[in-house]
Image 1: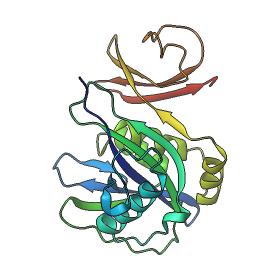
Image 2: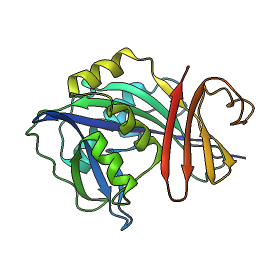
Image 3: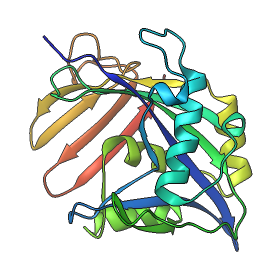
Image 4: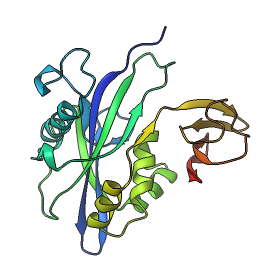
Length: 222
């Protein structure tokens, strides 16, 4: 029997710097160079009630709280733009149901990491973050990688936030399949998702992983 996923929230903070979009990534204090967005569990202090079916409001407050605790940022929960929902696979021992939000901040906003759970921070151009991962400088989990990949197609914070606000919220409920040389993580909308068959022809919404090549995100026709 799989564990019940815990409501969680994450906020993707973007800004415009000189001539390009940048996204804030925080380094987890694990010694493994894992970089993440601010985020964590939604709890009763955020207004979450047991069994609450609609918890977007508490998730907004949790995302703003985590940004304050982890990065010293003061965000308005009402200004957060919901962009995606990630549900941990059923086979995982710890599961989370995480709402991802996005928000823009000014170019000179000060970031102060907590020095405990978070050991450092960097503002990355999305393309630079993806390159740093390919080169082994940083590690990104699939939700972070996919989200940064989305941002890489936009030249400014306003363009990214506008596009995300106009796009229906995407739900990611991964189905992991073994393929030659690695794994294929299928997401809803992929032609092979329901059958767990990466070879099935049709629309693609998936993440390919391999030992030495990192990640490759594909989304087409859906």
